[in-house]
Image (tube, rainbow, N blue to C red):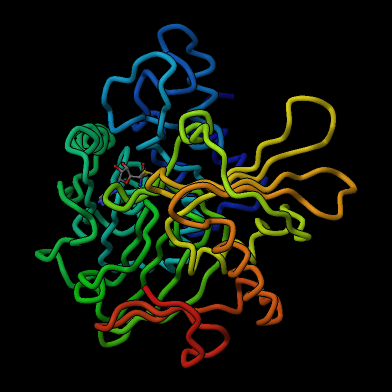
Length: 368
Ligand SMILES: C[S@@+](CC[C@H](N)C(=O)[O-])C[C@H]1O[C@@H](n2cnc3c(N)ncnc32)[C@H](O)[C@@H]1O
């Protein structure tokens, strides 16, 4: 079965389709929002795999490198997609959408989520902002073909869309480093859900209740969204980022895999905001691996060499930033706090900016 009903059944079987969204998911055909040529394959060559991709609970990448022509072999950064349907539903669940509400979506992408919102809430209650003109134009066409005419706006979603305010809900479908002030102004009493984080750890939803223009909330989930285009994290292939020069060498007794577990990585990302990591297994059967750290500006890197049964691990760091020292300090700080889980942290946002706290809003552990 390669129809919308197959997607409905898959989502139901995974317990990912709440009753209030069933009619919408069954009624809006995802195929109307997916281009004939997708990153996984080409409809003209393999129609079955196209249908398979469209009606699976999987993301479908629809643009790489901002739509610019990419020479063969060059790094391909995914820059627009139709998100994984179960993740869309998870976010909409966090958003707690109710009939009659006015919604602002950031990141129109294919238009599929805007179509779901239009079906459930009525198109006049839905505004969606997209930063990429060609993505927006295709999405608006897709929406029309599906019979929906929400307000679609070309612009930086960080500015929201003042003319449609106030909104009851803001849903952002790209990852943010912070919650823009414009969102609090335009949704002064309501709820905001956005993928949130730093280059080091971007895999959290922030779900914020807004009252009188001040927001407070918590972190959850494991979203893997594309970055807000205006705040991207570093990315690339190790071979392109590694400076072939000797770094400063040392060793550590911290097993590198412990550094990148979700809870410590979340905490490290509060202070080591503009650096990221990649775990790379060795090509042989040794079980060895290298944990790489890179600064977003590509000027600094560090490595920790993992070997099974080792008690200490070799470290090397290169460049103006001592990335290993930064990560180690954050990790030890997390230990000193008693290794708190991410669920114990919260986020407050107001006119003074955003603050991350542990257990209580006055116990601030990170600013931005
Ligand atoms: C994962 S896709 C969105 C999926 C979309 N909601 C859907 O249903 O197909 C992320 C989108 O966010 C857009 N985007 C990135 N930064 C943005 C920004 N600052 N303002 C508005 N849109 C942005 C990207 O161009 C991309 O199309």
